[in-house]
Length: 459
Image (cartoon, rainbow, N blue to C red):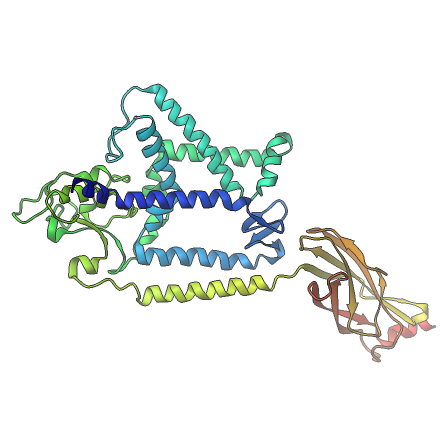
């Protein structure tokens, strides 16, 4: 029986550790996985590129970022409506870092704390060597964590090259050093104060809660009343004959954010369920269930079964689905080349005694593909010919090039005496080695002069 109680008392903690391990492995491995040279996610400011799901997008294609941000925020809202601050207790890097430093390094490895079941007590006095070792070990881990963060903005292949050439990459080193220093300060000195006072999530979560939100709840009907309606503590152990709370305060000592769950829902609670685990062995000795359950207010206070499918969750689910479909659709329309067309300030040039009219443009070609290509283009008007460039040109992968383009006509495109006329034309640009896949259409205009202007050149 004792063995069963011991196992039960650690069930949530063990599950959290497994989730921590999975998240850590995934976050460390993902930046190194590439398909056709592209990462699953990389926002590369140096090369002005976004890699998403192993597809490369140019910065001009950042119309995808709003969809990604919408998915992120809606996902957080959806998660909070269902399970409160479950992200904080089970997935947040801050929680993972503090668990590694406090529970693994300080407690298990270096014996600076007596037990992971008491997070309120300070570290043991003295033991300066062990404390120094803990700081050194965490500094190494903080450097790895900072590097992992940067790998989603600077690809690992460039990251290691930059480290070997620090003199020419001082800004990069400044970011790396600054992030590492913040993680060290945050975990060693700031601690859970970050969750309580700095993190904005704690402030906005309460508006997303409802009576069916899953969260750690102390059963006042079973355990007895500890605090009054104003949050004033009445006693540690309820005096009622049928009140099950023993007043051991194991749930208080184990709380990483230093709250008493028996007081009710609090912004500082991160849904880690350490308090629920701490109560299990105490109540187990009495043959009863934990007084702290991961449940909803409706289920605990009113006996009403929790409704997971309700208006809020359905609304968030639909919004998430639409945002995901939008992201997939926009991502599928990626252009493997980009073309911007700008006209020069001069409307046209007239040559050969008014027989020839030329328009000059600036074309900015960009190869967003992972391979080199040769490019050229066509004009949809058979009376307008391409003078320059006269033949296809090569462009390396992920490079751009500006081309001066001259279009010419020797035909009378329009006959009007009073004003110049803009004639709509369509430019079809393509890779000569892959016309079916790499092709874009751009609309512009060809200015044709009035007959009055042409007559001046004929004289």
